[in-house]
Image (cartoon, rainbow, N blue to C red; front, side, top):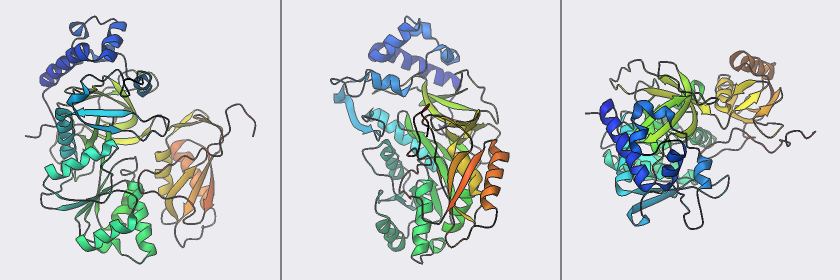
Length: 436
């Protein structure tokens, strides 16, 4: 049985038990829920009343940390029961730590196994992984490969030549990596006369950033590698690889049934958005069966489109396509603009462009005056056709209703990465309110 879909009454029972656990074991949520008017678990009720509860923000968790408790007040179990502690990258300050008990880790592996298993891989196939096993939470997904019966070849990030040597000598069936790195490998191989389409790789499993679902980027990866691309998505604070795409590639299936509950909200108002086919909003997550540091109504900042129409694969779970992150969103004269959506439109101009872009805001903060400067890299060996920059700006205006200024640069001018790409470069931005 595919346990990615769990009966509603079973989810409700797990939720009620989780709420009771929070009141008993989590100082953070006991105080928050009582402050919100809920004296005890009975007052909270079931999943049908979850929208009455307060959201949890990442900053809420950060503020609860102390020198004595580096994880935070949401830690709900003794550290003696914790078997693994992951961390975030800490790019905005001190890293956040994510503890897991043995049952928590088993749940994460179950979710990742469902997610990656949906892609159609088969036991006995071999897979190269480029995600480092630690300290970051993505490493937990690697345990799923063993559970799925794959021959796992962990290479990690930071050594492209070693990775491509393994592709040549070990002839893997699958590579797991970010879409940015998959694109970089194509360029690296082409510069050395290596035909990636002739390699043994027939499946790319991409995750870690938006982009794997962008039609132009996906088409380029599939053509360059001669491989099928499927996408996965998760969030370290909740569970990695929560969503996974099947071979029909009509969105990523929810893979956390019975372990995680998700909602869709309007990111501006916080109001619930019904889970209907084509609905858009921000994902909010709640643990249903978690011990170490459970989270309740955690705002992911992932803005998605939901698909509920039946999938030909037969899986009944809802599917999503990630449109971007609400905390990466720019506002150009009142128009919401996601960097990944901008890259998708510009990617439609291949083969004239490489698909690599850099957005250069002129002011700190989300609000930007038009035209928003965007650097677009030309494809290798390509000369800019007359009017290309104007054509790209016009297409962006037609598609995204945002005004941009396009500057074309030669191939190889923008940085590459073996992990997540940074689409926005703030180095030229001035403080809001200050003149240039």
